[in-house]
Image 1 (tube, one colour):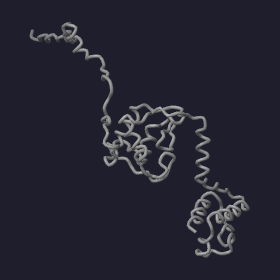
Image 2 (cartoon, rainbow, N blue to C red):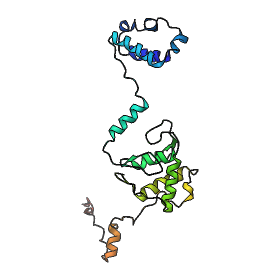
Image 3 (spheres, rainbow, N blue to C red):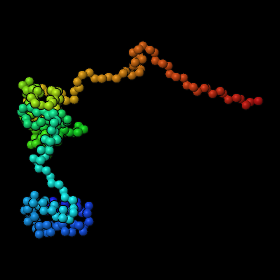
Amino acid sequence: MISFEMMMRRLRHLHEDTKLSTLTLCDIFGTDNPSFINAIPREEFIARVNAMKQKLRLPVRAPKPSKSEVAARRVECFAGTPMFKHALCSIAFPEEQFLRNFYIHVSGHRPGKMGQQPTPVKQSGPYCREKKACEDCQRWVQKLVEGTASLETPGAGWAPSHDQVLQVAARVRAALPEITFGGVELPEVGTRKGPRKRGPPPKKLRKETDGAEPAPPPRSRKRARKPPKSRDV
């Protein structure tokens, strides 16, 4: 009943009421009794409503794809794309956006923006199907640090670097202390590698360094005014 009312509300914004006069529950099902309508299987309900909409030459909304159809489309989309996966988990990752996808997968949270805290995953996705953190990948990160696991996976089209994996794990543990990764040593969050690039010294400091004396301030071009002539006779 609620689904039908929402559909009618959308159609009234796009079509005249005369076209919708015969698009009613009584015309479709012979009754508008809520208990009878709600007992109809959803697939049958949608099919009969769409049949009436086609008869009235109204747009028919495409049905929502099933999980198997979504999985098949994903496989087709990533066909030929190099993927990475390790032996402890069945999820494969493309190189594009690996840091974000692995963060979601290993933590069950989406990373926060602008310094905000991460938020739990509410809908299942390709990298977090169970809407919770993957404990197998947490153990894999621990083994990677301990040296008992390797990034070299037979058949993988690409592999992330050791530092990329550990940086993601460090960010996860800093935001979610309950995820410990076995207490292994991880890099500090926000640290920079290599010497910091410095620009040229300021002009004043460069002149003092070169040994040259600072230039005198420029003289004003204004001339002193002459005293007024005396009017005494």
